[in-house]
Each structure stands twice: as C-alpha cells, then as structure tokens.
Length: 350
Image 1 (cartoon, rainbow, N blue to C red):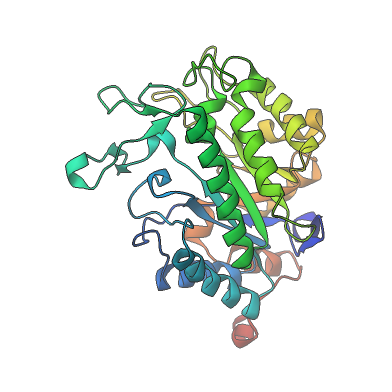
Image 2 (cartoon, helix red, strand yellow):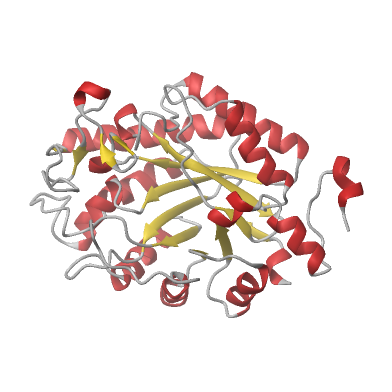
C-alpha cells in the first residue's frame, strides 16, 4: 500500500504517509508542556504514525488560543518540548514537528467563548478592528512595526524549535487565526501594504515563511496549514488558495496542509467523510505542490484511495488518532504491511 511507503521532504524521510494532525490539548501551564503531553504524543509514536505535528504552539503569550495552550516563546518551554522530542526519537521511528501559530482575534478564549479581562483574558490583536463574534472585545489592529515584531517572534520560535530537535516546522495559517485573518478580505480591510490585493493580504505569511526558512536547513522542512476556503461569499476561496500555494512553493514551502473554514462565524459547511480532500486535490494539481489531506478520514482503505488517486501526498488524521492511537500499526497488520511497533509489545501482534 502506498500509505505505508516512505516520503521525503528535503533530506527528511518519513517512514509512512500517516501524519498526526495538530490538535490542541489545553493542558499546558504558562505555555509549558508536561508529562501528559509526553504520554499523549509518545503513545501515537508507538502506534506507528510516520510524523506527529504537535499542537498549535504560541509564538507569543497573547497568541495562544487559551491560557492552557502550549508556547515556545521562552527557553523553559523549549526545554519541555525537547524532552518529548528526544523520547520519541530514542524509542520510535516517528518524526515529530511543531505547529507555530498566533490566534489573533480568536485568542483569549475558553470553550469557544472569549475570556473576560477579569478572568485572565487579554486584549487580542488582528489585521483590522473586527471581532470574530458580535459582542466580543474589539481587537487591536496591528501596526506595521507590531507586524514586524510578530514576524521576528515566529523566527525566534523556529530557532527554539530547531534547537529542541523538531524534524518539521509548520506555520499555522488556517482556521481563522491571525495569518488566516490577514488572508481573508472579510477580516482584513486594511489600506496599507498588508491589505487589499491577495499579494498584500498574504504579505505577513510570506514574510514569516522567509524569516523561518532563514533558520532552517536541508534537514528541516517547512509546512504551511491553510484553510482552502472560508465558505463565505466574497471571502477567501480555493482559487485564492491555489494562487497562494504557487507562491509558497516558490518561497521554499515543502507541503501545503489543506484544511478549511474557521474564519467566519456561522459559515455553513457541508461536513462528510473526506469533505476537504477535493481542496487538497485541486491545490496539488494546479499549484503543483505536495499536499496533505485532512478531515474525517477514518480508515486505511479510504486513506489509500486518496493517495492512489493522487489527491494528496500524505494523510493527516486527527480525531481517529484520539480514538485509536494504534491506527497505523493495526492497519498495517490487517493489510500485511510493515509499520513500527515497540519491540516490548511484540507479543501483542496477531
């Protein structure tokens, strides 16, 4: 099966094409990950996934979605991540990446609701003074100098990530978080060089990509997660995503991780098994770039079909790996394929 064949990005070879998608765990303290995260990620590594992409990790404190989200804006946080990375490298064949992000106007929340300033909430930032939900605090519109500071924060976070040993860096430009807010003409109404045309709205992302790539080498590839569409009239759409992906490829991005939605509250999305795969396929074909497919992919047969149809290069699993950490190992047994399984557990193989 193609699902169990290796794939290479720069000099990094990933042993199979199953990737654990980043999922927030809301379990860090002051941005510092802990033993829960070690067990959580190591279990999926023991289960045989080729690559883990760790949860959205804030590059600055106010960039976290919640005050329990992970961070990597200081060395203490980086050291905590390093412990997890080293354990996975020493005990499995799995590679591990980190998703660097900033939540923008969707920060300072808990259970989907904005946290008040009296309850450890904070003032959010955005490209424009447009809140995500009616009644929320108006976000602060970033100045050009503040944008430059954030670009540098992504770069510094990448430096710490590389020192911590991460194999892949992913930039979170999806789901209505800060970079996604800049990309959309519905949440970005700026009139300076960061607003207006697609090229201007993409400027912050391209500056971040260039800054991060400066600290990477041929052994550490760069991924970008995007929302292919925001499901809104006159909003960001898949044609925009194709155009952006062409530019990102030219800028040295190795894979486009294709998701969708998240920027417009109340957007109507027809959700079904594999509903985002057509976006991955279109971007892969028209932008001629490697893509990852994600979204209610739940079994190896479905994943293999996506790969065989050349609709994506890797398969990202999210909820399925929460339900079944050993998805890859069990699927390989069922299909007479080989995937990593801890030698300590060999007696459990059928």
